Length: 317
Ligand code: NAD
Image (tube, rainbow, N blue to C red; front, side):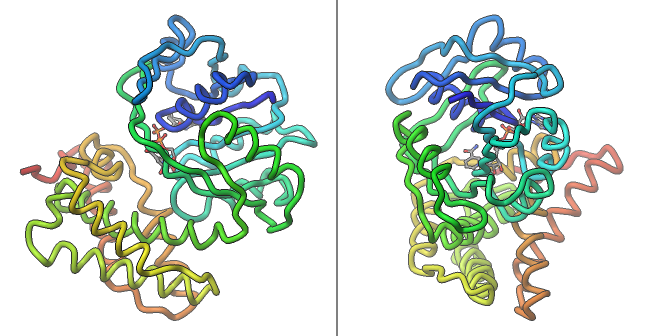
């Protein structure tokens, strides 16, 4: 397949590299000049548990420099950049191009459907992890899965073809007609742990240092899952609760991406996670006070950094 990755940061680079290693024709599209330059010069350095290697043969360029229409476009920008990124690849969206989003949060699929009809859009989640170590250098440890379905819910050949490409690349990918449950469960997990760490400057395990940390995380999870149920999504509260406990017990020293973004004075994905939950809760009349308070606190920290040039970092102990 001819595959373009829109937003070739940590996740986009990992997915692009794995698909290139499986023999696909991969183009990485990004706006990070240093990262693109390093990949063009030396290939992408990919460190996984199996090997530390350089993946050669991928093209890497800014979106406006690309001309070839891909069969599959995988969107892996942060959610707040989805609309601008999609606008930058209008010229690459052919009549048959399939667009897949595995981004976190809610709302990207609606944004993508402003550019491509829903029958050519695939949605899903992935539990593969990735970190951008530096320009041209990505690492990913452990294993993950991918679950996806068509955005309009119809099971068509594009779903099977995309699933097969990712699965044969060793990414453990399956079609899943219940993917909305997995999306909301991941949103619940992220809406609890990401802002709690971002606001308090805690690593995930530090949330467990007093009972109030897990209690607040569980309060947020309960609120988000209530919103999901009000949407008719059959979420599994025990599964999310177990994941949250597992993370607090075992993710020693882990700084979730929202904390990393705050520490680097970057915008966070708060609008697509807690913000989208709060908006959906208002539509359905579901109270979400903890989810909303965390959203407001993260927005305050972001604004402090952007508006006044102040240090956005909470104190890390
Ligand atoms: P990242 O910041 O490492 O990568 C995003 C890339 O998008 C950057 O390289 C940036 O330069 C690029 N970009 C921004 N605007 C662009 C534009 N207009 N055109 C082209 N490229 C543009 O982020 P990430 O960690 O790879 O996360 C991507 C998405 O995947 C997020 O929604 C995240 O929540 C989700 N996710 C991440 C992980 C993880 O472990 N990193 C795991 C699961 C899901």
